[in-house]
Amino acid sequence: MKEDAADRAKTFDANGSIKRLVDETLERLQEFRRKYPFTEDPDQIERLTADDIFKTDTGEMGSFFRYIEHQLKQLGHLTIYGSKVYHNIRAQLEDFKELLHIVVDKEKSIAEKVDAPWQEIKGLGGDSHIAKKIIFCFNYETGRVAPIFKTEHMEYFLQTINDAAVFPLRYESMSLGEKYEYLTQKLIEAKQTSEVTKPWEITYFSWFLYQTYPPPRMLTTPTQRKTGDDKTGLEQKQQYGAFIELLNELRRQEKISAEQWREYSNNWSKNPEARQTLTETLTKLKSG
Image (cartoon, rainbow, N blue to C red; front, side):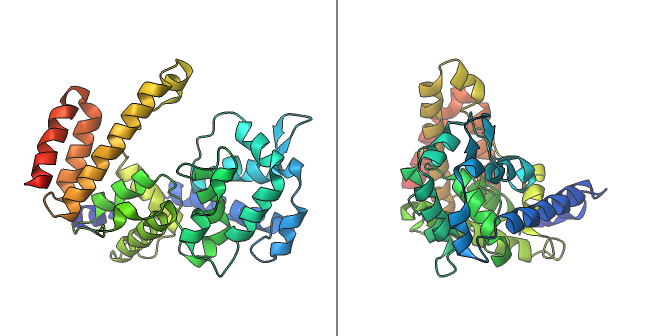
């Protein structure tokens, strides 16, 4: 971990309020695990009911996802618009149960769990944020999961707190699950290099990262969706993703530093009019 990050960790959460919040939420995680003891007894998965997912008679979220989305919010926030995804899960309850069996399978790697066919239930695919949180909750004790569910956030944090190049040459060809497993491992390794952060619980460390190094604001917002700017927002998000891939490649080639990676990323987000020039300049640097 770079010296700046280690120094900032020394003064993080001076009054202990975040630590207390995390500890309280971890207690609720234990409540959730007692109510749904799927890791300890996978046969209990078959007892999961449609009403645990969503109650169509009252239009209320079921207990399972009330924990995942709300009561365990401090273990990783999910941005979910509407209840449609819960209707989809309820309609494909048996498929969801099969996915849960994969989640708690001790013989499967974290990558295999993330790469399970979540996309077969509409709303659970893509970057699989909901799936990753479910995996986190049922694999917490392994010490191999982190409550950071956006891949681009994990990449950003790793580039921000590490001095050395961290991405292998095959990174872009990795699956979503392989990236999550790799990035989590590297973040945990970085945490272990500081005497201050080494004893920290992974959720508390994640809070430190989000509070100390807020990721660049995502371009596709709820307001854009409501005003019909979905297509533009998607295009901008894709452009931002391609730009981050370009930065990652330059970092792997050691043509830019971690500090430059962060500066370029922030410049891209804050100066839309300069994006094309910035991209062209860095593309030349990559091929030069």
